[in-house]
Amino acid sequence: MDLIQNVIAIDGPSASGKGTVASRVAAALGFDYLDSGALYRLTALYAQKKNVDWNDAEEVAKLAKDLPIEFDGQIVRLAGEDVSKAIRLENIGMGASAVASLPPVREALLQRQRDFLTEKGLVGDGRDMGSVIFPNAVLKIFLTASPQVRAERRAKQLGLPISGSDFDRILSDIEARDEADRRRPVAPLVQLPDAKLLDTSNLTIEESVKKVLDWYGEK
Ligand code: CDP
Image (cartoon, rainbow, N blue to C red; front, side):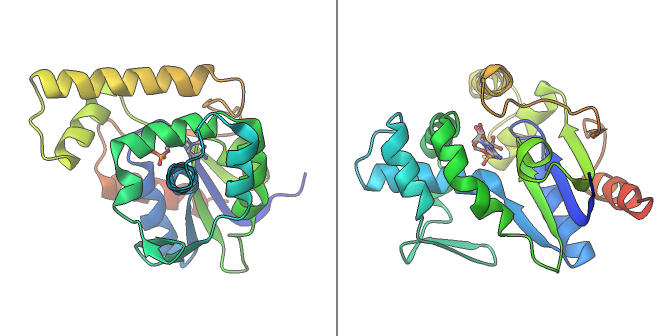
């Protein structure tokens, strides 16, 4: 299999910080960045707006195929409306998880994800960048951190303390989502044999970005 020299695939669990690392690596290399989770989130939001049930595989797949979306820097538009904040809501995260478990929906979004690659190069982050979307990426990374550290990062992001009942709920949500992502039959979250493990539990964002850039430099 010929490797694609200008693609980096970064997969990993919820709240691992892969989005931040992936977008900074992309900026450093002058590559585009694909936040594949955003496509599942947009699909879930679009289905909600169209009153389509998240478990209706065929109807959700139809919507996913023709998602009227536009990425403009940090802004994401759906049918012309700025939904950058709306897609980050917890409820839409749950919807994303539901629609992401439907094979016809994943199939509908496959080519769309590959189309993000141009001659500029691409850093993609998600659950199946290395296994399904870009199996011939020159560099594959499994980026993770311990559940405790990921829960702390999510709590800080939400402006909540890193102990107490809210924190316990965040931690158990993260563990539940990990379990669901690993066990699902389609595109389960796994570390591929050809992916490098980047455990960021004790690394800063800068250190994590540097590690990825160093690995890419060795290619
Ligand atoms: O980081 P977090 O898990 O909160 O969100 P995300 O990366 O935006 O992904 C949202 C949901 O989409 C996750 O629960 C994944 O199950 C799913 N997803 C997926 O199945 N495949 C991808 N390539 C990206 C996300």
